[in-house]
Length: 346
Image 1 (cartoon, one colour):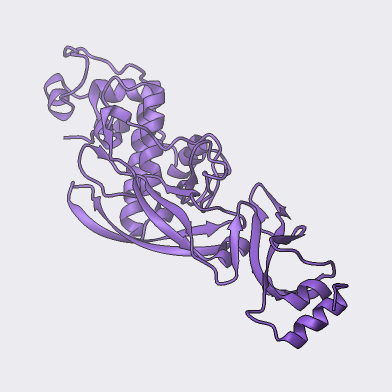
Image 2 (tube, rainbow, N blue to C red; image 1 turned 135 degrees about the vertical axis):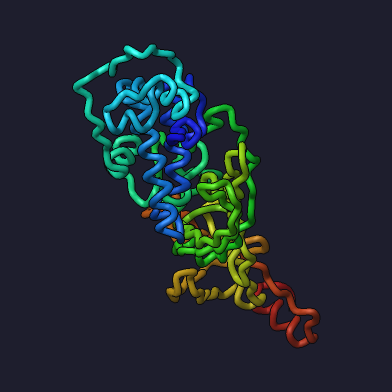
C-alpha cells in the first residue's frame, strides 16, 4: 500500500490550502533537524512531511495522487482499476479499464524540503522555526517576553485537522536581578515523550536555550511551541517559562526603577553623606548628599535603574531611600552642646 500523505500531515481529505499550511507549519516546527537531537530520524521525518505537503498543496499532483496513489504519481503510469483500488483505497474516483492519465505529459518533480520550508516560513527563517516565541503578537511587552528568536505573524498551528491541543505547561524561571539587568542565556533541560514514524513512544531529552533580555520583568512569558509530550490525536502542549525575580541583598525593583535603602546617623543627616554603591553591572558609583536629610528623604539618581526592555539604551532611575538612626540616649553634656550648636537655650 502506498504512502498516505493525508495521514502524514494529520489532515482530512477535504483539507484546504490553509489547513495544509497550518499542519505543515506545526509538524515542521517539531521535526526540523535543527530542533532535534536525533538528526537522522528528524531529517527523515522532516522530508516525509515536506513531500506530503508538496504533493497535497499542488493541485495537479494532488489530483493524480487522489486518483491513483503515490506509485502512479511518481512513475507516471496509471494502474489497472483493481490494482489502483488496492494501492490507494481512499481514491475519490472510480475509472474503468479505459482510464487515462489526467495529464500524460506530467512528470513528478519533487521540491526540496529546504525550499518548501523557506517558502512557508519565509526566506529568513532558520533553526527549524526557531526556539521560543513571544506570546501575543510575538513582540515583548511587560507580560510578553522574548525567547530564542522573534517571529512576526507566525502561528504555531492551531488544531489542524480536528486535533485538540493539550493545555500549556508553565514552569517558573528564577532569575537574579543581575541577569535581568545585563541579560543572560539560560539552558533548561527537558524530557518529553515523542512518537516515532511507527507510532511508538520514545523519551527525548532536549536543551532549551532562553535568551534573557535586559529589562525583562517578573511575569514575562517565554513560549516554546509544542514542546510537550506527544500522543496520538493530540497536538503537543506549549512549554511556557514564566520569569520570577530572586531577592537581591541590596536592591529592590520598582518597575523600571531600582530602590536601595540606606541609613545615616543623626550627625550625617545634618552634615551630609557620600553613598558608595556597586551597580548591578559591577561599577562603583558615589552619590554625595550635601543637603540636610529629613526622615523619609529620597534621592533620585537618573538613568541608574533597570534597562527598559522596549528601549534597551534607556534606563529607569535609582532611588536611594534614607532612614535616620537616632541615638538611643544622650548625656547631659551632649544635650548641652546640641542646644548650643542648634541655637537653643543653654
